[in-house]
View 1 (spheres, rainbow, N blue to C red):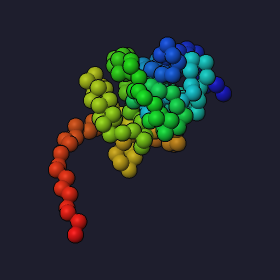
View 2: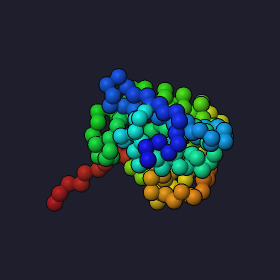
View 3: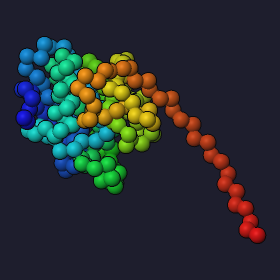
Length: 183
């Protein structure tokens, strides 16, 4: 089950092939209810020809919403199957990732944030603010214990959507560290 009825299949990579900036699946007979963008943590193995388990799951959510097109972007464009490999990369975001996220947000009718528990707060806040500029409600399929939007892979197919509230920027307080003399 590679394409789940997807008739159009595109992927946009960096020249080196290590960064995937966007993935697109178009569905035949989906009822023509626009496009949905899912923004997750980072790309794994899916490309223009093959789907991975996460993309198959996302296609199910998009079809359930009646979307004719699924767009996929990520907080980080570096392709990795494990978060530790992602964060070991020198530039996990990728040189063109935010530009692609803006393009995808402009093209989408609905935006679902779904990066899960491994997203560093600073990056998730920055991307939330970037996406919020497009006057489209940000939706999520639930939230983690830390308040991040849940990743779709292990969620029930009938998980409800709710509006995602963009976190306010955190203020970092700098404090002086005092060293006590040892006795």
